[in-house]
Length: 319
Image (cartoon, rainbow, N blue to C red):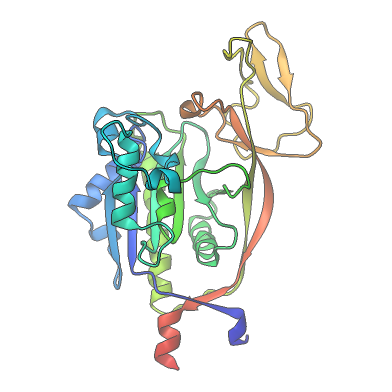
């Protein structure tokens, strides 16, 4: 293999683990608080790993947010807003987080952020990818998926021309979303917490191996690319008039074809999916998304390939 086909990636020296971006998603809250007291489990040679509680007011109240969704305000407009008394709490907090771990898009930003979330949907242990051309993160996901096999570890790609998320983790050079469910809001389940803990462990192991000189040859992973958000059927007063059909409930990542049941009205009418291709729904009936007018998201399966990567430091030291 020629050197031109290898991506020399800078060593990963600064890593953050975010919990409590949504204050009622308790797996990440519990893990981050534990690691703040006893962080031996997450420390790795040659890098700083910082556990951080992102929305402490929401955590204290065990609510998703105080004024607005912290995981949607890391855009230039909000990060650049003048701080005034009436500015939403989460926008102020976003600016503080950007100051500590960013600035977003700069060379000074943290190398990697794991942002820990729970969902009420039956998504299992899901990894969320923001950039389909991020060789480092795709390689990490490939490593994590192999480490967890045969347990299913789907990857959701949220890159989309019109759906902009502006996530908390997007401050980092390499943002990683960890979404584990099903778990009710305000509840912590041991099995869900353990699944999240293992994902973080394997991710940190990958970084350490890369920093220590291990090369990772080209790899390909299957991902679910977000295509469209689907709302519930509504009446003229904008009220929900149909619920997720029992045959769709808990079927995250399963194929949905033309004619399959989507919704059920309280009068017993079945509303079917109309589409000319197979899609894979996820975030089905997520509790937090009722306010966002989202019953589920449609995804399609695609393959992503990452180039051969190695640590830049090793290359310099051996030349």
